[in-house]
Image 1: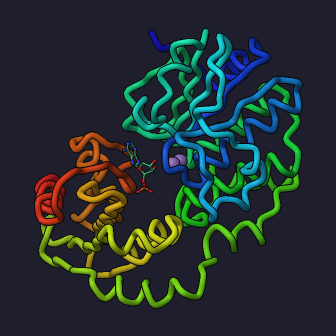
Image 2: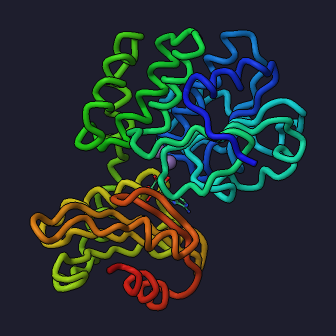
Length: 326
Ligand code: AMP
Ligand code: MN
Ligand code: MN
């Protein structure tokens, strides 16, 4: 049975343990890594022994700017223990990867997440689909529990907030309130924002040019809302960093003729990691709920941003995704 908790209830769970494993989702983004790094540092500051990891545990270069990223240990090196496991930004148990031995040994599992598609797992769950980022929820928990939010903790949490809100284009008043509290705690934002949102190696520009040139537009799809598609085949993905590949979706999102963007990434041959984005097309053309399509394909996410993994050749994967976009 999973007990729903608020931020105070989550802080009570943390307070019961002095050995804690902090995990985020596979192929972490800045919210996954930032929320987990901020929590790990605050718990260490209060005297807990913390194992901070994800599956398999190699931090992408693009995320190394996040304070605490250097203290991530490979999942295989985390000892199974009967204390607490916390999962951050994981919409389902699968998203944590191969953590079965840690879950089996733990006396409690606290899930902190903001994905509406989360079916609920763990012994306790703090789930708020209105939260702009998982890192926002972590700040609430730390403040409810009286933990020290120092500038490094605040910077790690800000990393999740600024990226999950598309630099505050969405997320509303709650996101700005969280930002204000993080800045008051000393979060560094300029160097972090550049590294997470802007920086690329020069060599990426030519790959970007040819990839963007291969994008396809279906203007009449989804009742005239339009879909823009881009596929990154395995032979290309093998030559570039993951952070660069993941950034492609923001270019697609900007295409005026399409309310839905689909980025297909063949990280392993015939295994496509699919990113879906959707925006409001105006009167009578509300947001296409891409999390419904992602969930039907075994993934999940938010109505306007979701993901899943689909196996097969590009044509069959494209057809399966298209059929679910309604
Ligand atoms: P991405 O396209 O990978 O940036 O993911 C967009 C949103 O969907 C993020 O909030 C992800 O955490 C979520 N998401 C991506 N893949 C999955 C999945 N397989 N299951 C659940 N949520 C996912
Ligand atoms: Mn995430
Ligand atoms: Mn998130």
